[in-house]
Amino acid sequence: MSLAFSTLGCHGAPLDEVLKLALSNKITGLELRTAPDEFTHTGLTSAERRELRTRIEDAGLEILAVSSYVKLCAVEEQPLEAHLELAADLGARGVRVFPGDEPSDDAGTADSPTPGEIRALDRVATAPKESRILLETHDSHSAGRKMAALLSLIDSNVAGHNVQVIWDSAHTWSHGETPAEAFALLQPWLEFVQIKQSDSTQNYRPVAIEDGDFPIQDLLQALEGTDYPLSLEWETKWHPHLPSLEETLPAVTRWLTPR
Image (cartoon, rainbow, N blue to C red; front, side, top):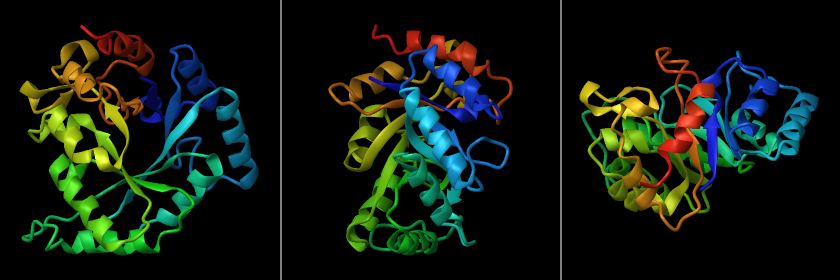
C-alpha cells in the first residue's frame, strides 16, 4: 500500500526539504498544504506552477491533493475555482475541501438537506471540472454516515459531478464508527485515506505514533485487497507538542506493519 504525507507536518519547509524527506522514507505521494506561507498557493505564476509540477514529478511523486481551506457549505463566497485551477496546473488528483456547514436546527437528511448542503450542491454544480473536488470527513461531516448522505444527495442532484471523498479515518473513528463501518459507507466515493494517531482517553487528542490507540490494524484489514493510498496527516502546525514529521515517518512504517 502506497504511503504519502501532508506538508502540514512540515509547514513552511521549502520544497527541497520536502522532497528529501519523501525520498528518504519511500514516500510516493504528497498532499500540498495551500496557504500564503507555503510554497504552494493560488498566487503562483504560470512559470512557478510549471516548475513546481516538474520538480515533484521528476522526484517520482504524485500530488494527491492541493489542500485548501475552502468550505463547501459555508455562507461566505469560497475561492474554489482558483484552487481547482491550481490543482489542474500542478497535475494533482484534486482539491481538498472541508464541508464547513453551520450548526442548524435542521440536521439535514437526504430528503431535507441543510441550507449549507444546498449551497454545496450549487457550488458543485457550477464548479469547473479542471480537477476533482475532494471532500474530507471533517468538521460538520466528520462521521462517515453524514458524509455518505451528503454524497448521495450530490449524486442525486448533480449529474456528472466530480466530487470524491478523502477519508480522515481518525475523524470517523472519533464519531463512533469502526474502520470497517466507515469504509463500507464511504467506498463508493473514496479517493484516498488519511491516517494519524490519537488517544481516545484524551478526547482524541493527537499524540505520537507509539502513544495512541487508533485501531490501525482494523483499518488495514478493512482496506485489504484495495489500492487506496494512505496519507499521513501529521498536524504539527496545529499541535506543536507532536514529534517532527522526520521522526514520525519511520515510526509510521513500523505502525503499518501487520501483526
